[in-house]
Length: 94
Image 1 (cartoon, rainbow, N blue to C red):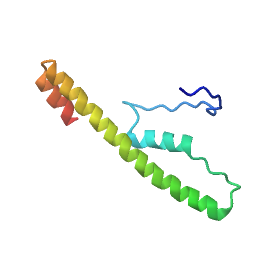
Image 2: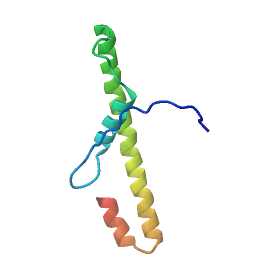
Image 3: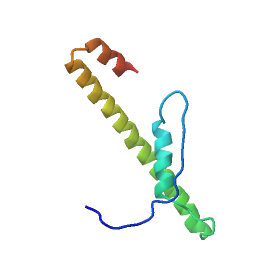
């Protein structure tokens, strides 16, 4: 168990309309929290950091999408096991 203390940064609020956040939105939130690039950094380092940030955005978005698909598959299986195969099929197609 982690017992250290530290700062988690300033809180912020992100909203969405007509549903939850997309995988890309969540990946962007994650990358923004993990990678901060100083405007005063040496230009070569700043460019490298932006390139790294772009790559991490793609990797994180991929795994967030995978997690969403796996969660939906799990929910469909549980709904099917509960005796609602049509509902599970409809959910799977969404």
